[in-house]
Length: 423
Image (cartoon, rainbow, N blue to C red; front, side):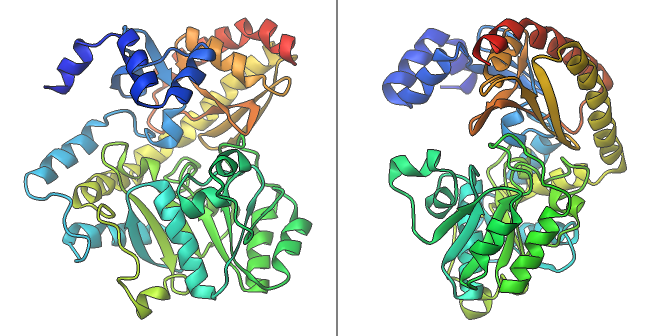
């Protein structure tokens, strides 16, 4: 059966029923309870359509996966061309595509980065980054941020918020969490000299994009150097030019020991992720290069897509457009905020990475609901639901931004009563 046949011969009601019976009943019901009856059908650029034809502007872009838009034609063409000569390849051996992508990524990364190891998902490469830090330091302890999120695999979920670890009994005593922007607590966690690493999203996405205080991230890096711990920058949601730099950590003047990337790494077309390592953190490869393996890690098809993504991201036209989108939308959002001073209370921003603050403890939930009814898809931050994650794509046009701002203004105004009711 063709994919198009499955979509055309299935109703939304049937999809919901089958999802509750066979897929994830809890997640399906959760969204329905929030009045988000979304099942995505057609998708193109920064729009997608509900199965019944409702058009939505996508400013969640699946956590940054679709920074270049849904089904970016250049990336799809790269995949199609690759299928004419390669498949996923063999994870044991080098390949021209794996080598070329690794070279491209290292050259686009901060000074000191030397090696790239591939995975197929974000959680997988977070696990690998933590393993690398432990191998390099001989230490077990991992320091992360309270209310952080790094994925759902074994080590990644242990490093994240209790929301994701407790249910599965994934808490581990060697994982220590400290408040964001608290240097004193960070030093307390590191001063015994027993921490393998600090792992941080440069701007914690699922926590609502709180911005690091001036000097905070460089100071954390200095503490890591002082106490012999490695610094891991989780750039899964903030990397790939979303800040105007390839890696958001560069905007804060920090050279990490390890960078992790996924989501938009191949434009949402083929699963691939990567850990970017400096010399110290890649020490294990000199001992046993086969100590870590991933059958689908570095798939040659994924490499072809990622190479095209990096080509697009490094174009001068793309860089200029990111500056335009960030500034133009901020100006428009400032005007909307002035018109709604009692409900729209703040904007957190670094480039196209934005968190919109609303009144009350859960103000972003009614905003999300009203925006959805008005044709915009943004999502509330699960670990701080007064913040709406707002992530416009890096290739947005002025026309798109104008349409988006118009719908944002209407939806936010429409949500006022519901925001104040729960504030």
